[in-house]
Image (cartoon, rainbow, N blue to C red; front, side, top):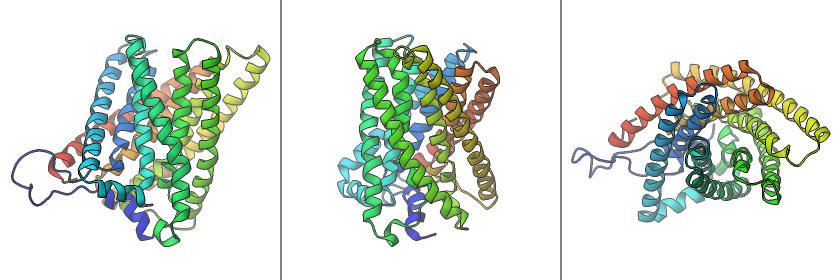
Length: 374
């Protein structure tokens, strides 16, 4: 594996303690916060969404969803605020993250972090504070979607413009900038519930469809390249192992998108057309989730091996969270479409595992931020 790829998944995510502050006073010990920390926002946001969906069958979980949403907003404010402060104080470092083809894909995580917290806010608070939740969700959706489209179109161009030695070999990290439009498609389909049936809702669904196609086409190319490279015997660096989970995000979010779009689409389509769309959505979901299950099995095997070899905590561990949560969301959405309680049960199992992983990553991240040691 070439040096630029290693740098993309390892070096930028290792915080350090500045010599002038180490051992002097308590406080934030992370020297610089870049876009690599935003998967923490993604992971906490998707946990709130998945928990709230399960609360439809188990109302007691609504309290847990509220707690997860509070944590997601806290993480967004801390990570986002620190990122902006560091960018303002050290614009040279900020420009370096944009110019570096090994780091710029992580700006897709920034977009997905905004989208994830926006979706969680709408899902959890929508029934109780409709106006506030809708305003916050729409703001984050617009910001996340605009940034996501920029990363999806701009990052591939940036990578192609870089020389082979600079951009390195294709890895699943390259998918980070092309997945956000799919997250926008899924969360945008859910946001149609805030609009009255009519031209506005139809336009939003059409936009979601375009985002779906854009992300699916770009993602397919990236995943073929990345898995093809790995299949030829090229392993990820040890500390870059969590990136192997990223493809699950595309499978889960695309499944959620096609199923969530069925409800608003029913208001504009005749029964025959809606039946065809329903069959297409179920067929696509079956294929996407099957591929996601295969990818999950491979990722689990690779991860277990990496843990045995001494995989240390880094912000990359948050890659274990959002993709798994996206799969849980997709399974839940398909279960709702089919009325299949066993799929809801599978989703609940994924959500339970997600909660444990998020908790572990939160504890390790807090220690990393306060001490500078992973």
